[in-house]
Length: 150
Figure 1 (cartoon, one colour):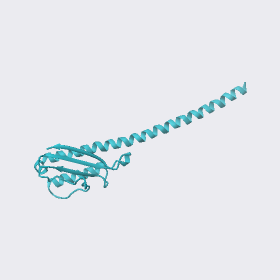
Figure 2: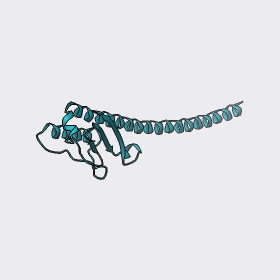
Figure 3: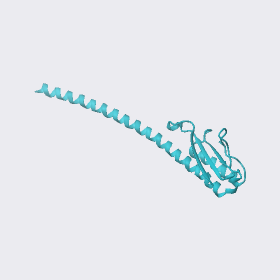
Figure 4: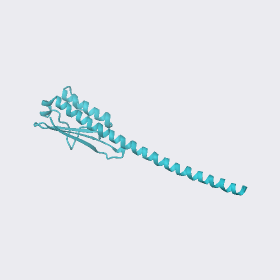
């Protein structure tokens, strides 16, 4: 009878060890999923902030419509986006500097965080926000573009 109990005790110990290994693998999988979810969440937050900041500039141009129609808000180009805040004491320069600084603050103070503003005299305007999403596993050149008529 002692021999029979000894075999069961050893078998139970093996079962416990296997259960611990399976549980450990499951917990490692959950940790990997959590890390991936955090990356995706960070990417989604940046995309939301970029959209909000593009609309922020559109609203600033609507508030100073005539200057926007005259092309005073135009900043950067597809070949050379604006990555540094312009200087100046006008309302337009202040709006542009506040916008570029907000981009840098919210999307990362990097050389890839840039913006483009372009309005024509008919009131068709577009605002482009570019930033790097490499931290979240995305591309180095994420881009949001908002088009509107003032």
